[in-house]
Length: 450
Image (cartoon, rainbow, N blue to C red; front, side):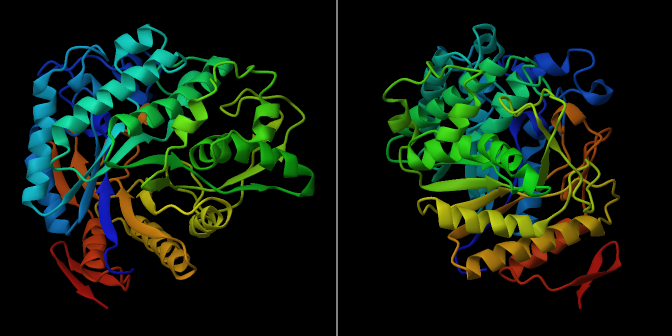
């Protein structure tokens, strides 16, 4: 990789912090959702998670040992504004002040994300993201956090994966708040984008980006081309186009005419949404292969019921996601070719495996995807950084604790942290400026480079 490339790892607040009722933190939609029987595998919740709220200094020391140059974390809105608006709890802000100071003391750049899905429950009770007011409240919250940390934070991310918040949260009910209302999901997507734009305005002068979960979408055969177009529209372009072109794709609007009238989009909204970005975060995990389906099936891809996901025949991670590192390269090249130039960062990339600390499969996954990044850079993609997902094993949303993405193993009974082989491998890659090479384990504490 080139000089100045940012090497980091990522987490999110609800997945690792725990301490859900301490120091004034209010309930989030994920607290409510996880407490609802049948919503999360094994009945797991984020009540304790990886206990990062109490162990953040230990975790920062691990980051320093790995040589991370940056740490992407999220701020829990309910810690800062327990009601989602109005009164600010300084105890919540103080936690993030302490975290940022600890990072800076170790030479690690903090990259906070303002929203990683934990909407304060009172805002959901008032209608949630389908309501325009939530976007306004988000801008207020962004201004509060920015004022508290602006003297120590350079790079800010507004939203993480608004596709998940909108369509898994409000269309399929797979994520919090668990609603199944397709029209509300489309409104939520727009208001998330609007909230981003309003937050950019509220943090005037800051370096601000947004993170999208993007992927490659391919048709199974020639007859499935329209199915691929539809899914690409609802997965990728419904967010990329408003942010980078200032408009919704006409074909996506047509696909959704039976779902919504788009009367929630006001004349000046798209100008607000498309405020210039300082960077675009790209989360990539897996490709999509799609086909036309004769039988309509409700899904997150509202407006396209006659589409199904099909098996591409690739190896899969333990969570069931197909592995295709070439898809990351192709995605980055598409962003280079089809959208206005903006610096890019891989803000999440990683894999869940049923592994012990000796996780050779994860090393192979990361190595292949880093090679794809290097190839994209050589082809002129303005890729500036890479954040591995995730620093720690954590609460993996509706999957609970069964799926482990971490570079660091967490024993949830004792909260003991153990570096996996992938963590040592990643540390070596960072130390060598991106040279992948190969490490061979001699024993549990000794490695040699082959």
